[in-house]
Image (cartoon, rainbow, N blue to C red; front, side, top):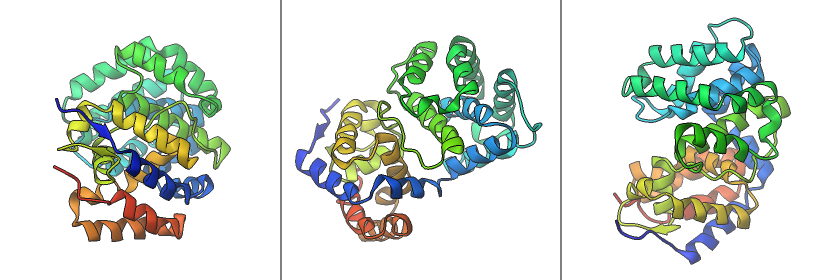
Length: 286
């Protein structure tokens, strides 16, 4: 496999552009995230702890989906909102399994997804119990959660679905605390959108953005450094990147810049222009 190289000049330029968007404005942008909306709906009807545990278990099986991520999380919310007003930790586990059975988005590898939820619930139950009783415990640091989930599943704590689970736990905590920044100790989850924008921004040099999915560590480390320089925690940066990361892949370059700028402008104001320029620096290499 070819080496993935970080472009230091591009890293600094991207960080400067993102620094123009204050953390407060990024948090307000996240309020438009369909994933946050879904978790908030569940938290409001059931409980924040119930929402945190169900969101974590759902995030762990958010792979090989047959629908867009936005539709997947709407399916999650609609299914869990059919339940009673509250629910125990065991109820959370059972209802996520029922959701996996019923949601069309989980059609591929459904059996493996069920087994993954079983393993996470039984082997990482102490972490899930802590999260259920105190969802805000992830705000000061969430590595305790990623480490226990990774150990339960025999994976590295920086793997995509492990890190994504921590982000969804953070979103559940936000339902109790409002506009609170993400913990700094959890890196960005590298999915197709993040891989594409990592390449299209010039942050890393790679012949194909899909290669970054197999070799994500240089990407993770590069975005950690962008976060340090910009002052925006990695999981909050992810919200910007995930929202617009599809554009350099699906659209001509100028159109991608326009779409990114227009999508971010209501929340990030003037910073959206420079962010669009830096994220769509070049086309996403196939």
